[in-house]
Image 1 (cartoon, rainbow, N blue to C red):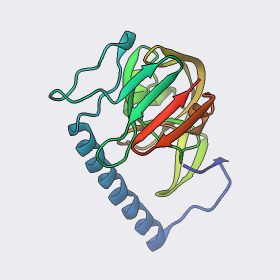
Image 2: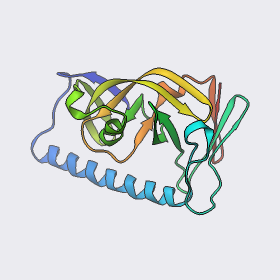
Image 3: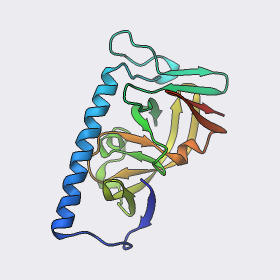
Length: 189
């Protein structure tokens, strides 16, 4: 998700080009779901409530480590950084995405934390690699990873069903720094 545009701006694709873009988006989403399922089966599990390890498949190592003022994330087999975060009291799985501009929730995850589709106004537009999507602005009371917790965070809820929620740049900018070392991402505060 690169750009944010208010409703009414931009051009809506119709006809053969519009159908082709929607088909391409469906293929991309399906591919992402397959990659995420493979990553999840590779033992990708983060920290749950109160810093306790979330249930994991087999005896895989915990990809989230915390030392002092750092959170260290290990990439899955396909290079994705996944983390379980407690959002408004519910544990949700996120993809840490430096290409996303904000915190972005799937409608399914939004429903789990109390944002039903009927309560949402889809007034935002995002240009993504899969084309333009509509989203609704929301505010998250809290987001916690391990012992680190942020309060009153702006986020967006996608209108169309999605495969995974994203922690984008608006979240990462809250850290003093973030860096990559091989298959490791280090978040420092």
